[in-house]
Image 1: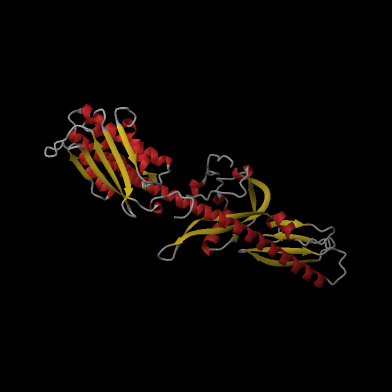
Image 2: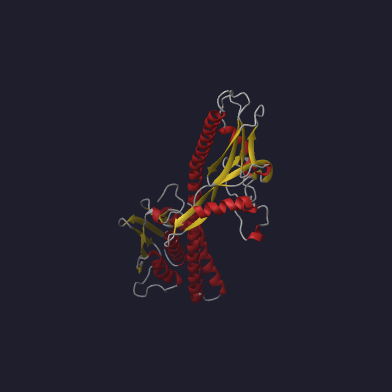
Amino acid sequence: MLPTPPFAVRPADFAKRGYAVPVMYLVPETARNRQSIGFDMASDPVRRIAMDRAELEERPIVSGKLQLVHAGHVSDQVGFVMYMPVFGASRDDGSRTLRGFVFTPFAADEFLRTSLPTDPDTPLGVRLYDGTETNADLLAQESPAARSGRVVRRWVDVAGRRWLLVVEAPPAMVLSMLSVMTLLFGLLVATLLLVLARLVSQQVAEDRVALAWFEQQSSIRDSLTRELNHRVKNTLANVLSIIALTRRRARDLDSFVESLEGRIRALSATHDLLTQSDWGATPVDLVIRAELAPYAQGADHHVDMGGPDVQLAPNDALSLGLAIHELATNAAKYGALSVPGGRVEVRWELAGETTARISWREHGGPAIDPKAGRKRGFGTDLIEKIVAHELRNPVDLRFEADGVRCTLIIPVRERGSFAIREGRPV
């Protein structure tokens, strides 16, 4: 893959027109072709007229005579360009939005040579004009070995453009002028149209592949933009809720900063997991291990976890990460992880086709008076309110005599309902 050059529309006088039609993609992808990326098709009036007709008539249109563009610059080579309009999906009123054009440039000399009969015994003289029979309108010509002055002129309609074809017979023709010229003219026109049809058919097949790729990339880009906007809003809403509740419970500025920093770090850790999976499915195991990693390394504490492979959607993984962080923080301050020999057990299982059950149990921690309970803090509110709301299921949080018990019910959705960068349709 060649490196992508900096994109710039040129020439840069499109501000006078109010719009531009830059070249976005060229096949084959060569270094020379890539130098034409950004050339403004609308900068030339001949091209503009052809594009306007193609859009209006909704069919391929051939432009008038023009100088072709090579490596991003107008060259001395004469030719023409065929434009095929590309429209988006129809609106409710039946109208369609123009998305752009697929274009095919033709060098006039090469086009004419390809169209001529290959019989060396009939050295024809052929001239092709874009309009009147003048040097200004001459597209291409093949000069005969010797002039005879015996010519036949015919108008040919090609993709919305009317060309004048002038055929000159060689001086040594023995057959009658009318028979020979009629035969040769018929062969030439038929060959010309066949070549054009073959070139257009081949180009349409290639362009369909390119258009399908562009449509796919456009759809992915739009989906990513919408998904990013949605997730950023959700994350900011969670952060604002955390800040507001932490401020209410904080005794002073230091405790506020400490609590807030820990919760933001919990969000960050889960975000890292989601980034590694391209914001696709994230295993429950990885989310829990990431939050319990700081507490599972000491010899005095024992963290036991396990369960089947359960994949979570991005937002559900974020909510689970917050809940496990709060439970672990509570256990480290007041529960099983605050004393030597304390043990935390985390188990998860599928509770049906669409949900998973996650159980948190503490053992060996300081005794809890079930009647007095434990002072409710922000962590309790976060789990029972914010997390429960995000997971769309109630949270069962209990302070029992031998330790904290918490049961979370998490939705397990089909991957296609949240995956946005699959290699196959979802």
